[in-house]
Image 1 (cartoon, rainbow, N blue to C red):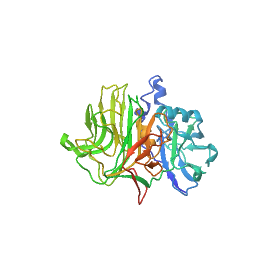
Image 2 (image 1 turned 90 degrees about the vertical axis):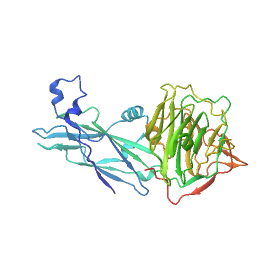
Image 3 (image 1 turned 90 degrees about the horizontal axis):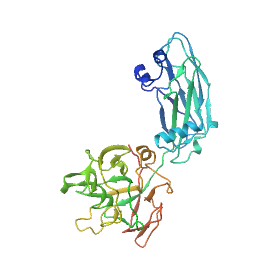
Image 4 (image 1 turned 180 degrees about the vertical axis):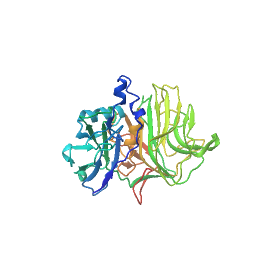
Length: 378
């Protein structure tokens, strides 16, 4: 059983209250009760059936008398609002598996923090691998009001996915022919990638000359370990990837705004503006993964591993990228192409079939490698 005591970043009273423009001056100066951290994320390891947490709220300023506080589980509508605001799809943790040592506590006279209440979560052994659940806890007080934005704290619990089977790419490739008429306005490319050795130009995926996501272009002035988006326009990140390390990388383009961005491990590393209506992934030499088979100016192979390789017909948000690095539902809206590259795709007669749309990609055969340890994204 684990015990996690939360001590969150203290927020100054002036900053906390500055947004309350419509309140009276006296109300702005009144002490408020709140949680110091709005979100608390935890991974549930195998074998854990329960976890315990010490929950405590605090005041924005000391008062001369005792303040009574109480805690309750917020309802489903709060989770729905959170998901809508943050572009997430968390399910609510089952309230029947939540036990508070007490629903009430006190903030003693002259103190800022409430006496701790123990919260125990049970049934964790039933959580599915890759599942993320959220539990909202609300603070109440009859003595002082709660700050609107931080009167609820969210416990986000996830069971890590363990990927140990991946696709090996040395001079291997997948060439995909999308259905006739396919045209991406907005889009996302994303994959897990591990590079053994960087060449001068390393193909991740895309349509060369139109919309390609790669690492390096030494002859074009881009260092061999820099992620780059190229085609009708071109831009790159300003920091190199390291060899022998797993990354989640993504390229997005949102056509209505004209904004494109490159993400690494869910964080934006570069962005640009492209005023293009979209593109046909079948144009030029077509859509390729891993290398450009038969390309007259060089096949530009990737030397390493790929896993969870996906193409979307929508621009995925930063939160969506972070939440779904290691897995995604093959039937997700907007998912146009999905190779898990864990041995689950059918490979037969120089063809590999994707998990999202059943598209057949031409291939010279992707060898599936078993890793010594599961993929970890740092």
